[in-house]
Picture 1 (cartoon, rainbow, N blue to C red):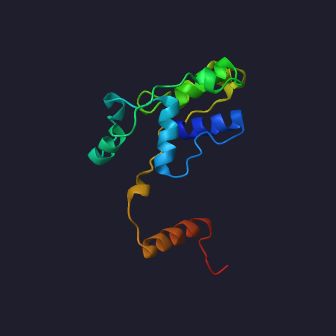
Picture 2: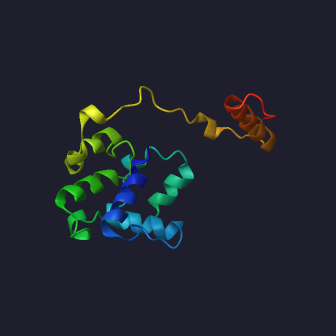
Picture 3: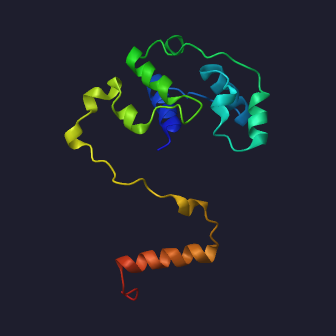
Length: 152
């Protein structure tokens, strides 16, 4: 699960406006860094591309804003969850399990009604480059599992 995206949606629900309404990717990155602060080198370890890392390091530097000042109409506990979801480095960001146990969601938390997947989903198929013919074949094979006799 992409906790960053959930954090953006959460922030937009709470404020009822786009969180980072950038005009393009450069403007949007500036809006992000104006809120969460410019990442330091240790927060860029997950960025594989040297070119991208260099680009981010050359952007203007911004200090982190106080989330409570930026989101004055949100409860402090909601602000805390949002702040933990919007950490630049995904390794330092709150996990889904941690977020579900966060005090903001306490009233919705019921250990007896929270099934957990036994193994993470494998999304490796998204990395393969399939031809149109390959995709049609996969769709055909999948549809046959639901209707073995395609003439009916």
